[in-house]
Image (cartoon, rainbow, N blue to C red; front, side, top):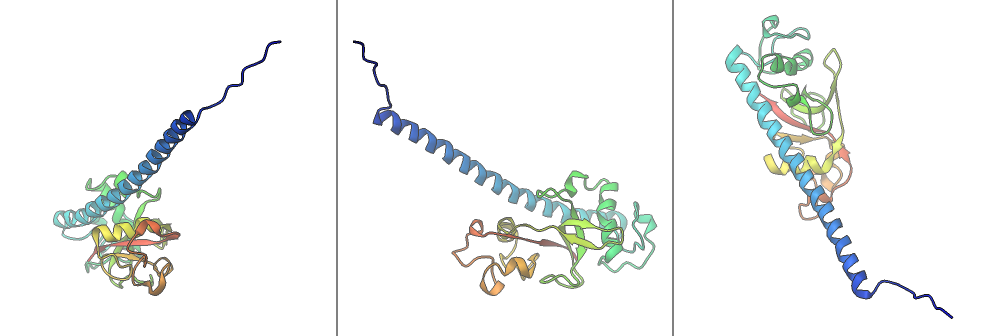
Length: 212
């Protein structure tokens, strides 16, 4: 009578498989960390480019993009109003378009890593933002220039703030809304767990000062 042989994995084979799975998972997590870090560096580069673009535009036209615009316009020559170095509603709305049309920035430069455009907004009535200053923020604007900010992953906001500013959501050039900052007690910092931005959870808005 013939007996069928039973086959199975040895402990060594199982150990090898587990090691391979561990390496694959480790590579996947490391790859995600690299992607997250690249997003923060991309944002920092976009901030530098935007701030430089405002200065280049001023040198070319003697005014910041949108300053003096009474309506949404495509060229600076249509902005005949008073120029005070700060942008209001309709002036904010014109600024990105003018920078692109002047060839100083490209349409791609105006897209954030979060899949929505960078828009320019004023600090008035925005929690933790300074009145009379202008900020770039991911979001949308109406034809009247009213901004709706897009909530983004607070981990990236925190990491950007630490990379290019003071790491505090209520001060400096990188600001975060109260809802965002209050993810930790006191709203004086993004985290109380040793400064690990990537341990945070939730979403919030972000604004990076560009003017004045």
